[in-house]
Image (cartoon, rainbow, N blue to C red):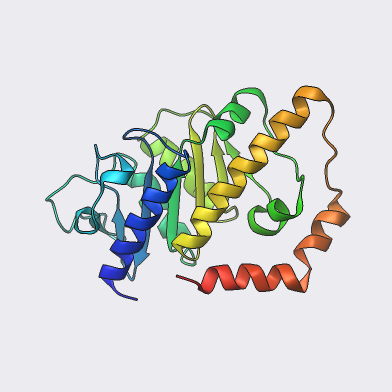
Length: 219
């Protein structure tokens, strides 16, 4: 692992986020940690336009911007605070997926519905609407980031975290699929939820543990 590799991985998953329709225009921001430095998307850039050398390095303990060629994303505090509370986290993906946002407009929960959701996402936290880019929002998200890897921001979007960018990104994809399935099912009837026993059974499968462990190790 190196700084250059981190920059290339960020560029890769930024472009995947746009290609999958998880964010549009200059919205959303992603970061990755390398030692005590996080590399964050620059402010004002559409994610698909960021080149490897343009990710902004920020010192996590102090919050100092280490290269001021570009201004860091306006959500810099949210990323910083999350890294500070959870040392096992090395990547954060903040996007504005349509179904996830739609879900936050009409509901305060995302039930456990299918195996991939149970294995990769787990329990989901909700944060009430707060003006974006503020320290209040950063604190609310950080409070959840110590216990949850997927956090829905009411009327705003989604934050997912992981032990690497690959894990954080695929959590975003599965979260959007989960929200989509739930909203479709809810529009025609009462969705059948996995029971607590079924949920725990999936999480306890050796095959799922292997898959998640592999995902965390792959770059």
